[in-house]
Structures are given as C-alpha cells and as structure tokens.
Length: 62
Image (cartoon, rainbow, N blue to C red):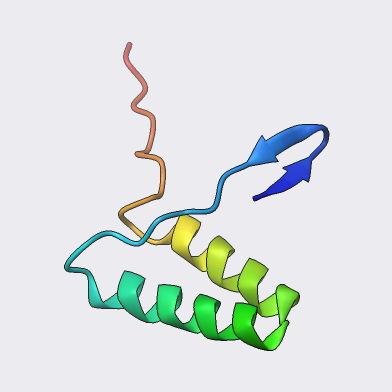
C-alpha cells in the first residue's frame, strides 16, 4: 500500500480462479522479493485494469 496525494491506495487482490490474475500476482510477488518496486507497481496497475477490477461503464440514462 502506498499513499497517493495523502490517501492510502490499497493493493489489488487477484480473483480466485482467474489465470491472468494469478500470473500477475505471482509476477508481483517475485518482483517484490527482488526489490523491483516499478514492476510491483506495474503489476498492481495491470490487476486494477483487468476486467474483474475495472469499474463498469456508466450508462447514460435519459
């Protein structure tokens, strides 16, 4: 977790049963063990953008 503009940003969690999420989480943990913070952040961003975590599109209601 890191702060962004004074607010805490939680690390995204992999969705159980999703191979993409599992691969990103494993890559993130390996990067963390090696001290690769930029890669950890890249994996976090990819997890957030992955379909399970992406915000649903807003519908325009007339």
